Length: 110
Image 1: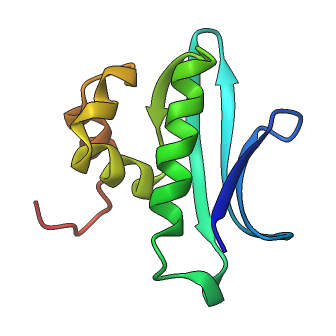
Image 2 (image 1 turned 180 degrees about the vertical axis):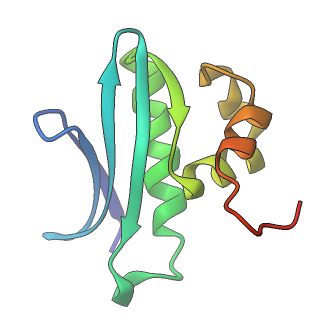
């Protein structure tokens, strides 16, 4: 079964489905000219299947094609994804290094 990513603009989220089941989502908030990607999750029983990466890849493609604004990654998974995929970094409002620094938690090494 192929995963399918949909955009629910009323709820400010992208969702990933396997068949009729929603198995993950990415919430966002909008500000003038900006889209803040605030939370990404995949249901525990579907983790480890690359679904979060597919969700991010397709969501960022939609953000690009729909010209939804410059991306501000708040979610640590999103920051890590965009760090590993430099082809997405032109969507960023600020350099990836700023997003990485903002996601550091107390006690993190490097």
